[in-house]
Image 1 (cartoon, rainbow, N blue to C red):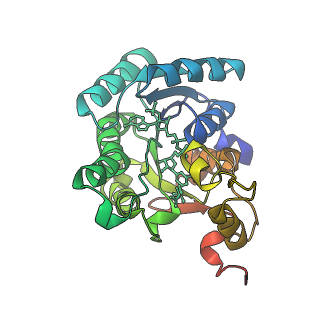
Image 2 (image 1 turned 135 degrees about the vertical axis):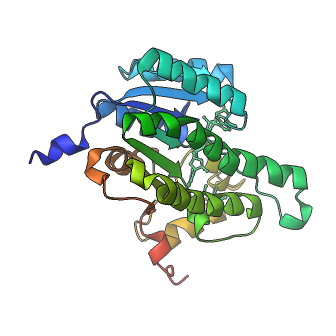
Length: 266
Ligand code: NAP
Ligand code: GCO
C-alpha cells in the first residue's frame, strides 16, 4: 500500500469557511498543498480581496465568496455554486468563528446569541448544506474547528465555551447520523494559536513586558510556546484524507500538550 497516497487530496474540493486569514487560511493552504481545490468564504469584501491576493501569492487558485455562515440562504447559494462549477464539496472545514471576552453577568443575551450563532449554528448550517451532496458522492469529510474551550471554561468566555462545547457534540452527532454514508466528521481542537483572534492576549504591556496571559499560556503549555496556524496544517490534511477514513467523531487536540498538563510551578 502506498501510504502517502492515502494522504492525497487530488481531485477533491474543499470548502474552508472563514479562511481569509488565520487558522482557516493555513488549513486551506495545507489542503491545497495536498491537491485539493480550495473554496473559502468570509463576510468582508476587503478581507476577501486581500485573501485572494495572498492565496495567489502562494500559487493557490482559490475561489472566494462573500457569505455569512449564519445566513442559510447565502450558504445554500454558495454550496449550489460549488456543485454547479466544481462538482460539489468533498471536504468541509467549519472554521469561521468569533469570540467575545465579556464577564458573563455583563454580557448581553444578544452578544451571547451572536457568538453561538456564528460558532455553533453556522457549522450546523454549513454541514446541513453539504451533507446531501456528500451522500450522493458516497463520501465526505467534515472537520469542525473546536477549541480547548470545548473541554475547559475560563473567565469571560461563557458564550464561546458554550458554543465550542456544543460544536464538539455536533461533531459526534454528525458522525453518528451519517457515518453509514461514509461521511467522517471530526474536530480539531487548537490550543492557544497566534492569530488576530488572540492578539489582545499577547499584546505587550505599557512597560514593554509580556502580557500576563501570554506568560500564563507559555507556562501552561509543555511545548512552552503559542501555537501557530502552521501547526494545524498536518492534522487538517490527515482528517481531510482517506488516511482517516476509520476516524469518526474524534476531537484531535493540537495544543502543544496544554490539556494534559497541570502547569509549571510559578
Ligand atoms: P480569526 O483570525 O478571527 O479569523 C476568523 C475568520 O472567520 C475570518 O476570516 C473572518 O472573516 C471569518 N468569519 C467570522 N465570522 C464569520 C461569519 N459569520 N461568516 C463567515 N466568515 C466569518 O480567527 P482564528 O484565530 O483564525 O480562528 C479560526 C477558528 O479557530 C475559529 O473558529 C476559532 O474559534 C478557532 N480557534 C482559534 C484558536 C486560536 O487560539 N486562535 C484556538 C482554538 C480555536 P470576516 O470577519 O471577514 O467574516
Ligand atoms: C481565549 C482564547 C481561546 C482560544 C482558543 C483556545 O480567550 O481564551 O481566545 O479561546 O481562542 O479557543 O483553544
